[in-house]
Image (cartoon, rainbow, N blue to C red; front, side):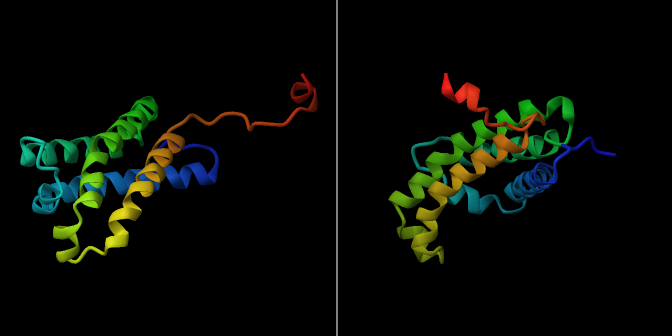
Length: 142
C-alpha cells in the first residue's frame, strides 16, 4: 500500500500529479514528433531532449509516490517545468505553425500561466504534511 499524505486534498493532488507526469512521460515516447515540433530551433538534439524529458517525467511521476523520494521528486519536477518553459514561450512568440496545425491561439498563451499552476502543484503536493498554520494575535501584534 502507498504511504500517502493524510489530508484528502493533498492525497488527491499527489495521485493526480503522478498520473499526469507518468502519462506525459509515456506520451513523449508514443508521440515524439509532437514534442520535437514544439522545440525551439536554438536548442540542439531535439529527439534526445524529448526522450530525456520523457524519462524525467516518468521518473518524477513514479518517485512522488515513494515517500523517501517525494520531496526530491517534487523539486525535480519543478526544475523540469522550468526547463521546458522556453518551449511554451517559443510557441506563444511564434504561433504560426501551431495555429495552422490546429492549436487555438488562446491556448498558446494560456499555457504560460498554466505552467505556473503546474509548478505550484508539483511543489505543494510533494511537501510533507505539517501542522496547519494558525493565526495568533500575540504574534501578529509584535
